[in-house]
Image (cartoon, rainbow, N blue to C red; front, top):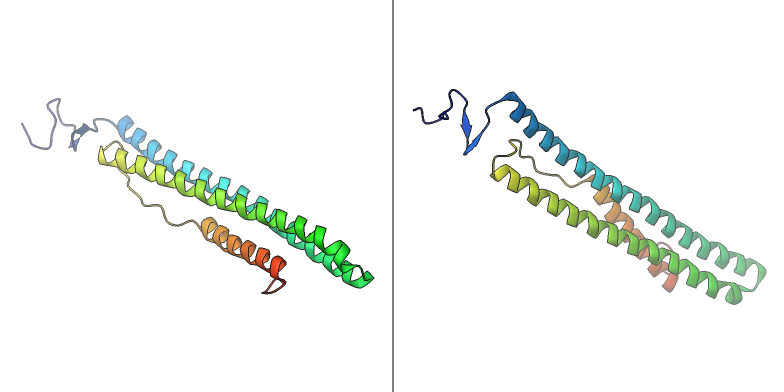
Length: 163
């Protein structure tokens, strides 16, 4: 019997798994594409958290800045500034916390997805082995996280680029 052939005829073997039909090959392709769809779903979830965080951080900073400037114009800065500062910081911190949780969730899901895909590839259940690159969504989320932290520092210290 030929080394690369199974005992059932002319179907080639691949690492102990028999790919004996076009249906099996198509199933392998569908499984690989399912991983890609799941990866895109994880990115969409992060994008939703990113949008919500951006809104919270933006509204928090805007509320603080609006009431701070309004208080200066009408001469009651201290009476208006403290509640606006507290509310603004709260919204910005909520945005930063949500973004941090979103990034952590994204990292966990991608880590699990990679492990599952590597395991299936090692068992020759899927033939296509691709490495996930860093998503641009993650880069934007990290930059927004840094901007949110700078906004908190700017509100608290009235210094920095947002002060």
